[in-house]
Length: 424
Image (cartoon, rainbow, N blue to C red; front, side):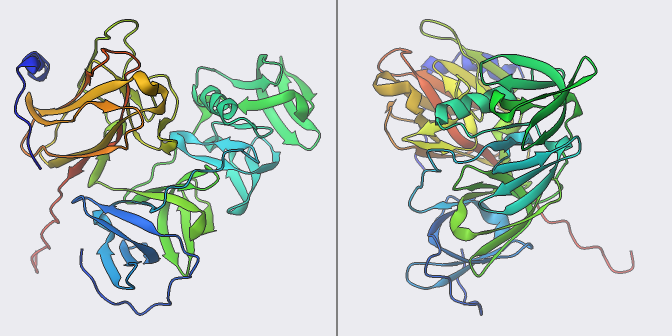
């Protein structure tokens, strides 16, 4: 990779720093003709295109490329699997959403709910019983407009409430204690009196975030995005004969056809997404107008990161001119991301992306306009103390410079511990 020369315009960043694949045959059934084709991205930046023959819970992945050759690969080297031909998750929602922590959500018809569980019928997984303690909230009826659904998700995830809350179809909100949901309506306690509203009057129910339980997942896990916009973090993931099996963070076993999967993102100690870290320092100085802070996994306006109509699960939303710095660990070897302008920018947006390590510029993009496909960035950060991501003014000053550092991540190197010496 060509390393950009250090720019004198960035001397002021020193202040910020001072602050602180093998192939082998496998004896297994041939992949189904209907299996989708995936691109498998690995931590060294290589991509192998093929159908998933199998994945094992132990981490081995077998792909069959378009020439019919098997590739057996180590799962710990995988960053993600994504459709070779990008698909758009269904544009018109046909069922409500159950909203879970950390970006998870399940689309399905709501059969019933009480103070302990919520029952959902998913078109992908079938019937599910979800503990209410792991639910952020849920919509009652599907939002037929995707923008309306986006607003509902924002309201449910904002967590600015101190109790359960009913979001009514007329726009009113009512703080209550949720009791139950059935065919006839939503039951709740208001001033210790049990009351009930018809389902047609209630748009969504947000649950008390103070009662939310977020089960931890030790070790290796995967974030899966499905074709109906369902998102789940799974452990014990396996694929065989065109079907995926796994276990959710709340302990429910799920299974689906592989062709309902849009993408699989690997999570391990080797891959650390910046959206899961706290920045050491952030600075945003707008050209004109408000300086919007850096956002995790969304744009500076709070919308999903979307480039050329395709949504991305992870990333950093920024605007020019901004700097965000992260303290590096000794194990950190590389910084990887794709950079682009979000679709919100429109034709006037134009930015330059820069990556600095300890004040030295390691990467500078050309001026990036809206509509340009994401540009891959891969920078050596080994031995550095600070990683700095800069979103700089482009040709139009700061006009609609709504930028995205898509799936910004650090690749860390961990040495396997030496085996114990016999007799010790």
